[in-house]
Image 1 (cartoon, helix red, strand yellow):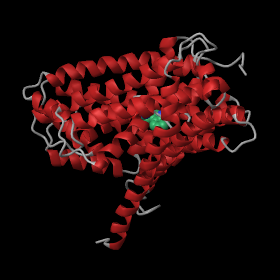
Image 2 (tube, rainbow, N blue to C red):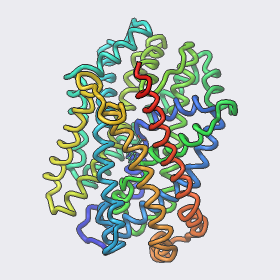
Image 3 (tube, rainbow, N blue to C red):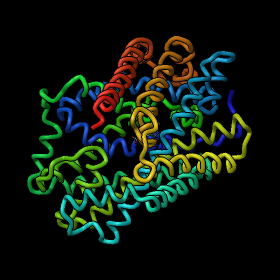
Image 4 (cartoon, protein in one colour):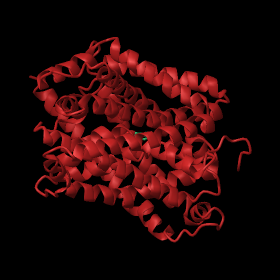
Length: 461
Ligand code: TRP
């Protein structure tokens, strides 16, 4: 089934840089630190790590395996491996999810570009916490400025994707990922050497079982999924660019460990700094865009570290967004026989356009689109709570029950070259553990949102 002319990753490091580049993103840097602290620190970390290994890793291996075996885009892979069946819908879900995610992801990434520029210009100093909050809120509600930054971000994303797998994705991942690690390490050193940093480290790592609830468990699984870029065919697409000589089981292990390590390092940057300056750890986007500027302005060398931090965030978002756009572009190229240039132009501009409406839904177009949510939150909800878990569930079932152990082992071993002594454990997860766990999270996510909505609907005032 090999395609002689397929643009493949050239080196082992290239595969890891690209896949880790996809995995490491906004999820690691702004979301992980906050939820880890919120749900009981060490206790949450322990469970999160468990989910990464028991459920995330098996699905990552499956995605790589499907893509490399089929040598096709997310949709075409299912068509090739399961001819004349409905399994291809799984791939189609992936392409739809890519559209939804990239639209709002580009908006948040644009915010980090704006904050990098603002801190370069020295505009993030001498402010009270309230001023930082209103600065952020009034910025994201503006009609033009966030859209400009989001468009710049999307142009850079499309520019890299346009160059192709080797000259675009692989080349830039190999430059940007080491850069990201260096920036992160500089920030870790700065943060843990601040007086009072221990309190933040304790908040992060000391298991607090009183805060460790069912909600925490479910969040840990949902986030493990998002953080590893699973359930959407991103890693099927990247897997289709991996050579047969690559040990994909080992690569998946390395990528998932790198992703987890970087999330923990990001938390080590943020929490000690927040505690050293006695600022309450804020929520969600606020932690990065409101709390942190407040921390940086009080820190020696703060402006420098602030620029570094927002560049880090932008770089992390960029290597993730190229992996999302690539899912749509390869789908267009292979299923509609488009040129890469045309496909990138269409996919890039249409996701950017939906993104513009997402951005506007923070301000002038802030109306309810679905269950009381604006467009931004609606896309986030459908992508994270419906499409990704559903995609992951179907992928686990596909490999576990349809594709089967024998063919999987054959592909994972690259035709006998590598030992696959984990095959039985892998299949216990793919057949039973992963589907059941994901199903619970899927139902829970929908029910929880429904509950919140019904409360809002009954008591709107
Ligand atoms: N993993 C990225 C993050 O943590 C986001 C991402 C990239 C993603 N590709 C994906 C999430 C595919 C789900 C599916 O920010």
